[in-house]
Each structure stands twice: as C-alpha cells, then as structure tokens.
Length: 177
Image (cartoon, rainbow, N blue to C red; front, side):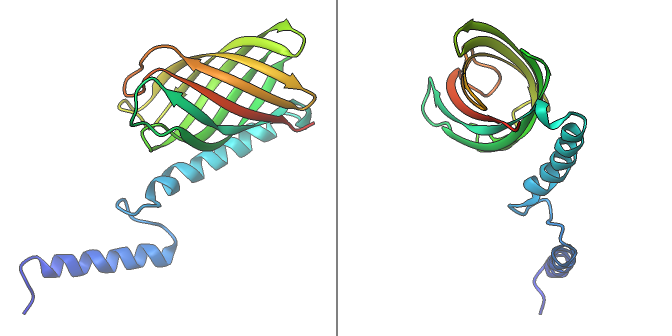
C-alpha cells in the first residue's frame, strides 16, 4: 500500500534522479545555489577577462573579516577579478561566501588615490547579491598596500547595510602581469 502522497513523492524522486543524471541539481540540493550562480558568474568573469589585456588584470581573493556583532561568518572564501581602467581605477566582479553563509555575486567600481609610498586609500561601490534584497549597494572604504604584483587591501564597511553589520576585512590581490 502506498501512503498518502506516495505517488507524488515517487515522481519527485524520479525527477531528482533525472536531473542528477543530466548534471543539474534541483532547487533543494546543496549545490543548486552554486550551479545557479557559478555558471553565469564564470561566463561573466571570462567575458570580463577577455575584454582587457593581461597587463590590466588583478585576481582578487575572498575575505577574512571581523564584524561588530557575533554570529556572522568571518571567513569569506571567493574569487574575483579587477580590470584596471586607469592607474588608480578599476572594475570588479566576482563571487564569495558572504557573512550570512550565502553565496554572493558582486560587480562594482574601485577608485584609489596614492597616499605615501606603496600605500593608497580609496573607495569601492559594488552591487552584491545574497542578502535580503536581490541586489544590495555596498560602499566600502579601503587602504591598499602594493608591493610589486601583490596587493593587500584593508576594507571597511562602517555602517550596517540590510543584513550585514559593519565590518573590517582583509583581501589579497595578485596582479597578473
């Protein structure tokens, strides 16, 4: 005897199996978010990268962050790319695991001004997904130390934005050429 709703459950299991065999996870799978975000982000980053010469590309890591409140993820792995559009400006795009433990995708603009020696200060304005709103504008202040092809950025979000508290984060960047 099939319990009430059993036939529906069997059809659902068959549909899951078909999706699994096709290499596409269902909405409820753990990898579904990565599938939904990963392919479009990879395609976008690839197109973004080919639009610039290799001399203008910088790889961006995820973040190590510290929040003003407890209960938030402070290790934010991710990968991004910056295409420099001048010596002190650039376009950013990437993905990371945000402080709410959700996958985020971001696209934005960076402005830097030289301060002294290898140090510069600046600001970033990005639109990021993975928070309460579909796309959240995120303004960040930054201090960047450059040494040859390596950069270390100290990022600061001084105010609460939607679900995200204020935080300080470190990001490693590597200029390709």
